[in-house]
Length: 339
Image (cartoon, rainbow, N blue to C red; front, side, top):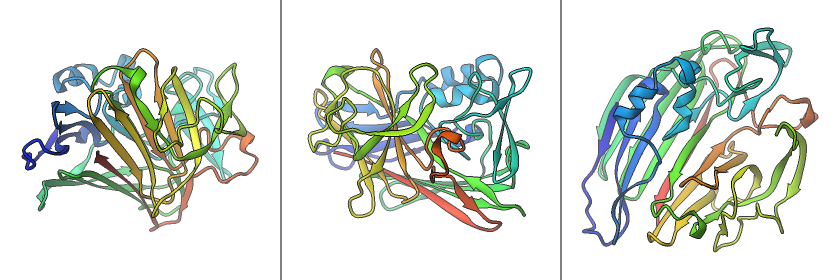
């Protein structure tokens, strides 16, 4: 576990970040973030259990096989793909086989008949360095992911830079093809942003997306079709944000960018709290929004790729998987700001 912290400097006059906790043995999961909110005091930005409870759950066995419980709290990073991938299921139901540019890729079937949320859940970070900065602290690390346990076409190194200041949490991940063959690459994450008041019915959400990916009502698979969000319950484009009327689990895309970033935000008026989530990398094509009706979090997932990116339903559309030739890199960057 790595813990970065800073002292509040505004004497409660403005919101500011105070600390963050990382799990280097679990793919650098950004497990906890705390902030000070005027009139409210210290709050948890992410919904996550105490460290001791997480350690009890993260056993690598049972429900945590393949590291699955890593993306059930905090902010797990999803690499080398986000969302789900379908394919041919093995006879024992344990593996999914698909194809990328004629290369066979076999993945753990860690969610029924699908591979979901990448291959980083049990990867361990190395070369950890905590660096003091003018506004707080920064952590750098590398994960030599190799071929992700034999599941990916080439070798990958992941360089992390996560900086804490009063004004922002800056997260940057650079994926480099360290092997000798081309490889597909996508980066995303799965942050469970808390609703501090616990009152979901008064929360407002803003997402600068023009359309949603349609899914089959029977098995929730993408159809390859889109629907404009205008006039639907998935339209969160208003400058005042939109309400969370019901459970939501939707992939939104065609993002509007301002000064190069696509900015979503979550506001909890009862607490006087707002969190802006800024997608800084142009490769971030989608935002997946997940928030169960009876829970107190909203996941705003900035991702390179669409769900099931190699599915035939997309009919050759660019679904966000970046091709890295040997030696090439791509960077995912997201910034969190309080307001």
